[in-house]
Image 1 (tube, rainbow, N blue to C red):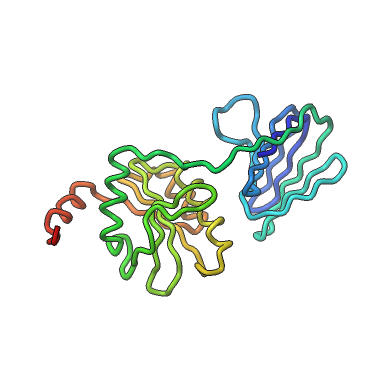
Image 2: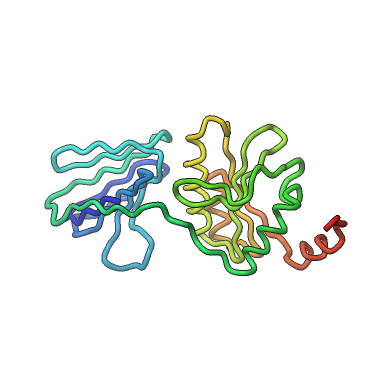
Length: 219
Protein backbone atom coordinates (compact mmCIF):
# COMPACT_ATOMS: atom_id res chain seq x y z
CA UNK A 1 0.00 0.00 0.00
CA UNK A 2 1.19 3.53 -0.81
CA UNK A 3 0.34 6.27 1.70
CA UNK A 4 0.70 9.90 0.62
CA UNK A 5 -0.07 12.85 2.89
CA UNK A 6 -0.43 15.97 0.75
CA UNK A 7 -2.05 19.36 0.47
CA UNK A 8 -4.33 18.71 -2.46
CA UNK A 9 -7.64 19.32 -4.19
CA UNK A 10 -9.73 16.58 -5.80
CA UNK A 11 -12.19 16.67 -8.70
CA UNK A 12 -14.41 13.78 -9.73
CA UNK A 13 -16.11 13.51 -13.12
CA UNK A 14 -18.50 10.67 -13.85
CA UNK A 15 -22.08 9.92 -12.90
CA UNK A 16 -21.99 13.29 -11.15
CA UNK A 17 -19.37 15.96 -10.45
CA UNK A 18 -17.76 16.60 -7.07
CA UNK A 19 -15.02 18.94 -5.86
CA UNK A 20 -12.86 18.84 -2.73
CA UNK A 21 -11.07 22.17 -2.17
CA UNK A 22 -7.39 22.41 -1.28
CA UNK A 23 -6.62 20.86 2.14
CA UNK A 24 -4.29 18.36 3.80
CA UNK A 25 -5.44 14.81 3.09
CA UNK A 26 -4.31 11.19 3.05
CA UNK A 27 -4.19 9.49 -0.35
CA UNK A 28 -4.18 5.68 -0.23
CA UNK A 29 -3.20 3.60 -3.25
CA UNK A 30 -3.94 -0.05 -2.51
CA UNK A 31 -2.26 -3.08 -4.05
CA UNK A 32 -5.32 -3.83 -6.20
CA UNK A 33 -5.18 -0.29 -7.65
CA UNK A 34 -7.97 1.26 -5.58
CA UNK A 35 -7.32 4.96 -4.85
CA UNK A 36 -9.00 6.54 -1.82
CA UNK A 37 -8.77 10.08 -0.38
CA UNK A 38 -9.28 10.50 3.37
CA UNK A 39 -9.61 13.46 5.73
CA UNK A 40 -8.46 13.41 9.36
CA UNK A 41 -11.88 12.37 10.61
CA UNK A 42 -15.05 10.65 9.48
CA UNK A 43 -13.97 7.16 10.62
CA UNK A 44 -13.35 4.71 7.77
CA UNK A 45 -15.27 6.36 4.92
CA UNK A 46 -13.14 8.12 2.26
CA UNK A 47 -14.10 11.53 0.90
CA UNK A 48 -13.72 10.18 -2.62
CA UNK A 49 -12.32 7.05 -4.23
CA UNK A 50 -11.88 5.10 -7.45
CA UNK A 51 -12.20 1.33 -7.32
CA UNK A 52 -10.00 -0.97 -9.40
CA UNK A 53 -9.53 -1.65 -12.24
CA UNK A 54 -8.26 1.80 -13.11
CA UNK A 55 -5.28 3.65 -14.56
CA UNK A 56 -3.20 6.04 -12.45
CA UNK A 57 -1.03 8.59 -14.28
CA UNK A 58 1.26 10.73 -12.14
CA UNK A 59 2.26 14.09 -13.62
CA UNK A 60 4.14 16.90 -11.90
CA UNK A 61 1.70 18.23 -9.29
CA UNK A 62 -1.26 16.28 -10.63
CA UNK A 63 -2.57 12.70 -10.60
CA UNK A 64 -5.19 11.42 -13.01
CA UNK A 65 -7.13 8.26 -12.15
CA UNK A 66 -9.48 6.89 -14.82
CA UNK A 67 -11.49 3.69 -15.15
CA UNK A 68 -13.13 1.80 -18.07
CA UNK A 69 -16.51 3.40 -17.27
CA UNK A 70 -15.13 6.83 -18.22
CA UNK A 71 -15.00 8.15 -14.65
CA UNK A 72 -12.08 10.42 -13.79
CA UNK A 73 -10.48 11.50 -10.52
CA UNK A 74 -8.05 14.44 -10.72
CA UNK A 75 -5.84 15.07 -7.69
CA UNK A 76 -3.92 18.35 -7.80
CA UNK A 77 -1.05 18.31 -5.32
CA UNK A 78 0.21 21.61 -3.98
CA UNK A 79 2.61 20.12 -1.42
CA UNK A 80 3.57 16.54 -0.64
CA UNK A 81 4.23 16.09 3.10
CA UNK A 82 4.87 12.33 3.15
CA UNK A 83 5.10 9.50 0.63
CA UNK A 84 5.76 5.93 1.74
CA UNK A 85 5.19 2.34 0.67
CA UNK A 86 4.01 -0.21 3.23
CA UNK A 87 4.05 -3.94 2.47
CA UNK A 88 0.79 -5.28 3.92
CA UNK A 89 0.91 -8.90 2.75
CA UNK A 90 -2.15 -11.03 2.01
CA UNK A 91 -5.15 -10.25 4.19
CA UNK A 92 -6.90 -13.36 5.58
CA UNK A 93 -10.29 -11.65 5.27
CA UNK A 94 -12.92 -10.74 7.81
CA UNK A 95 -13.76 -13.40 10.36
CA UNK A 96 -17.44 -14.23 10.15
CA UNK A 97 -19.55 -14.37 13.29
CA UNK A 98 -21.41 -17.56 14.12
CA UNK A 99 -24.62 -16.63 12.30
CA UNK A 100 -22.82 -15.55 9.12
CA UNK A 101 -20.76 -18.73 9.08
CA UNK A 102 -23.88 -20.85 9.49
CA UNK A 103 -25.69 -18.88 6.78
CA UNK A 104 -22.79 -19.55 4.45
CA UNK A 105 -22.94 -23.29 5.16
CA UNK A 106 -26.72 -23.44 4.73
CA UNK A 107 -26.75 -21.45 1.49
CA UNK A 108 -23.83 -23.39 0.02
CA UNK A 109 -26.06 -26.48 0.14
CA UNK A 110 -29.00 -24.77 -1.56
CA UNK A 111 -27.78 -21.87 -3.69
CA UNK A 112 -30.74 -22.40 -6.01
CA UNK A 113 -32.83 -20.60 -3.35
CA UNK A 114 -30.98 -17.41 -4.25
CA UNK A 115 -31.69 -17.77 -7.98
CA UNK A 116 -33.23 -20.53 -10.08
CA UNK A 117 -30.58 -22.69 -11.73
CA UNK A 118 -27.69 -21.38 -9.64
CA UNK A 119 -24.99 -23.98 -8.86
CA UNK A 120 -22.05 -23.77 -6.47
CA UNK A 121 -18.48 -23.61 -7.80
CA UNK A 122 -16.79 -23.24 -4.42
CA UNK A 123 -17.34 -21.93 -0.93
CA UNK A 124 -14.68 -19.49 0.37
CA UNK A 125 -13.27 -18.98 -3.13
CA UNK A 126 -9.74 -17.59 -2.60
CA UNK A 127 -8.55 -14.29 -4.08
CA UNK A 128 -5.59 -12.03 -3.30
CA UNK A 129 -7.94 -9.61 -1.51
CA UNK A 130 -9.74 -12.21 0.58
CA UNK A 131 -12.11 -15.16 0.12
CA UNK A 132 -15.44 -14.79 -1.68
CA UNK A 133 -18.16 -16.41 0.48
CA UNK A 134 -19.74 -18.33 -2.40
CA UNK A 135 -18.73 -18.45 -6.04
CA UNK A 136 -21.53 -19.83 -8.20
CA UNK A 137 -22.50 -20.36 -11.84
CA UNK A 138 -25.88 -19.28 -13.24
CA UNK A 139 -27.95 -20.88 -16.00
CA UNK A 140 -26.28 -18.67 -18.63
CA UNK A 141 -22.83 -19.80 -17.57
CA UNK A 142 -21.94 -16.50 -15.88
CA UNK A 143 -20.09 -16.49 -12.56
CA UNK A 144 -21.89 -15.14 -9.49
CA UNK A 145 -19.99 -13.83 -6.45
CA UNK A 146 -22.14 -14.02 -3.31
CA UNK A 147 -21.29 -11.98 -0.20
CA UNK A 148 -23.16 -13.01 2.95
CA UNK A 149 -23.82 -10.71 5.91
CA UNK A 150 -26.05 -10.99 8.96
CA UNK A 151 -27.01 -7.33 8.54
CA UNK A 152 -25.98 -6.19 5.07
CA UNK A 153 -25.09 -2.52 4.73
CA UNK A 154 -23.06 -0.27 2.45
CA UNK A 155 -19.83 -1.94 3.63
CA UNK A 156 -21.08 -5.21 2.20
CA UNK A 157 -21.78 -3.57 -1.17
CA UNK A 158 -18.28 -2.09 -1.24
CA UNK A 159 -16.73 -5.45 -0.38
CA UNK A 160 -18.77 -7.25 -3.05
CA UNK A 161 -17.85 -4.57 -5.62
CA UNK A 162 -14.15 -5.16 -4.97
CA UNK A 163 -14.56 -8.94 -5.28
CA UNK A 164 -16.52 -8.69 -8.53
CA UNK A 165 -14.03 -6.31 -10.12
CA UNK A 166 -11.12 -8.51 -9.04
CA UNK A 167 -12.77 -11.72 -10.28
CA UNK A 168 -13.56 -10.06 -13.61
CA UNK A 169 -9.83 -10.08 -14.37
CA UNK A 170 -9.93 -13.89 -14.58
CA UNK A 171 -10.96 -14.68 -18.14
CA UNK A 172 -11.82 -18.27 -17.14
CA UNK A 173 -14.82 -17.01 -15.17
CA UNK A 174 -16.34 -15.05 -18.03
CA UNK A 175 -18.90 -12.42 -17.08
CA UNK A 176 -19.05 -11.94 -13.29
CA UNK A 177 -22.23 -10.92 -11.47
CA UNK A 178 -22.63 -10.14 -7.79
CA UNK A 179 -25.25 -10.72 -5.10
CA UNK A 180 -25.39 -9.37 -1.53
CA UNK A 181 -27.29 -11.66 0.84
CA UNK A 182 -28.35 -10.96 4.42
CA UNK A 183 -30.98 -11.58 7.05
CA UNK A 184 -31.65 -7.88 6.47
CA UNK A 185 -30.39 -5.52 3.78
CA UNK A 186 -30.46 -1.81 4.59
CA UNK A 187 -32.30 0.58 2.23
CA UNK A 188 -29.00 2.38 1.52
CA UNK A 189 -27.31 -0.91 0.62
CA UNK A 190 -30.19 -1.84 -1.69
CA UNK A 191 -29.93 1.46 -3.58
CA UNK A 192 -26.16 1.32 -3.88
CA UNK A 193 -26.25 -2.32 -5.00
CA UNK A 194 -28.81 -1.58 -7.69
CA UNK A 195 -26.80 1.45 -8.83
CA UNK A 196 -23.78 -0.82 -9.30
CA UNK A 197 -25.77 -3.50 -11.11
CA UNK A 198 -25.53 -5.88 -8.15
CA UNK A 199 -28.35 -8.06 -6.85
CA UNK A 200 -29.48 -8.34 -3.23
CA UNK A 201 -31.54 -10.89 -1.35
CA UNK A 202 -32.94 -11.18 2.17
CA UNK A 203 -33.17 -14.70 3.58
CA UNK A 204 -34.89 -16.18 6.61
CA UNK A 205 -32.51 -17.98 8.95
CA UNK A 206 -35.18 -20.14 10.60
CA UNK A 207 -36.56 -21.18 7.22
CA UNK A 208 -33.08 -22.23 6.07
CA UNK A 209 -32.60 -24.25 9.26
CA UNK A 210 -35.94 -25.97 8.75
CA UNK A 211 -35.00 -26.83 5.17
CA UNK A 212 -31.75 -28.31 6.45
CA UNK A 213 -33.66 -30.44 8.92
CA UNK A 214 -35.91 -31.79 6.16
CA UNK A 215 -32.96 -32.76 3.95
CA UNK A 216 -32.15 -36.46 4.00
CA UNK A 217 -28.47 -37.21 4.51
CA UNK A 218 -26.46 -40.43 4.38
CA UNK A 219 -24.22 -39.27 7.25
